[in-house]
Image (cartoon, rainbow, N blue to C red; front, side, top):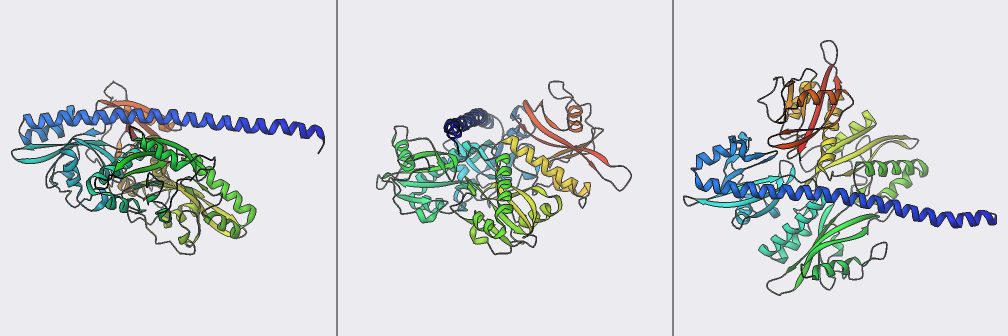
Length: 549
């Protein structure tokens, strides 16, 4: 190497390193701006929910019971977008639940709440007596509700309203606050035991809880039980930041809570921390959880493609060992690589190495779905696929690809959970399009699945709708009352032709559009597909889903 080249490299390498750092800082700043905007929207919606419940409680007190429940169901005053008022009596019987008439007179007494030990209705009553917020699983998604208990004629009723926040930042803070509330109500032993449960209520996807005393001793950990009992006061991240000390410092502040940023598992992580005090010993602890802001579908695809390149370069045997290593280069935040052969045998799994060597073709997710079987079938048939599943109390997506190499034919992928409404909506629509594209699924079968509340196409407030090219509604989530009606000329509340715009957008490549309905702005994503039929030419279908802003 000549002197001139050495000098040039000596100048360029530091410059390239500087520019890479600049790019990373700009990307992180952009992510923080988006996260701040999402957080502001969620906080606005949380205030709207509280206002709705406070006003509903006043109305409930002012009129007869049947009048109040009728109003909450049929009067649009009590509906804003996806927000509605619900009412349960103290035994868990539903008296009103927006326009979900199927739930009325049914009981949720058997539905478990925080910790999975006692009925959800008891948690609702406990929180509602003081007027407060409660997070819980509802309709296959994480719901945040404001609750208030009203006594009428000697009987307690829970009045509430809620929404489904698709934000890792909000979910992280809510999980910590749930754990803090549980600590104050049930004590440290019960709380730390739940935190230690890797599949318990204080886990949401790759967001898990951990707790320390102020000397740095780990007293609970939802992801690595081996850390419990260890003194981690000197724990640092890959950049030398003293993580545990930073968490303790934040918990010691007058406010007793806050956010701490650091690097973990080769990725940027944000943790929310809050101080608690054992009332018996007066000993303080910190409870915390964190999330990875950079994980999304794009980073997941890049991660999987990097693994495919590595497999082709070093061969299957060496690659599978690397993918399953707990300390290798194929762990990025909550992302790890898994590999199956076409028979369902697990050949690599960075998230759970214990699965390696097992045949998981009959393995099910949290809802009993044979997700491994679907992953293999979809990848083998389509080459690439997104498969939804329910794991660790949240909706997850597996991005998978089929790879054919001299060592064999495999399915390789990674799972992530969408951290925004927009991501969830697009993934849901793409999955519905894939389901319709499958020649083995008739459109009638697809429509039946899309309309089923127990299917993977129903996630909290997100559902699928389908129109034909003339504007006839064929699917409207689980709402069957408007099927076969034509809405082509029906305007929204601002006079905009909703369905005509939806069809035009879908036919012209798909995309996003907004309109006004139920006293709120709604944003929908649509795509079109030509579905073959048994009678003549294919039928054009426009498929979509959306959420309220």
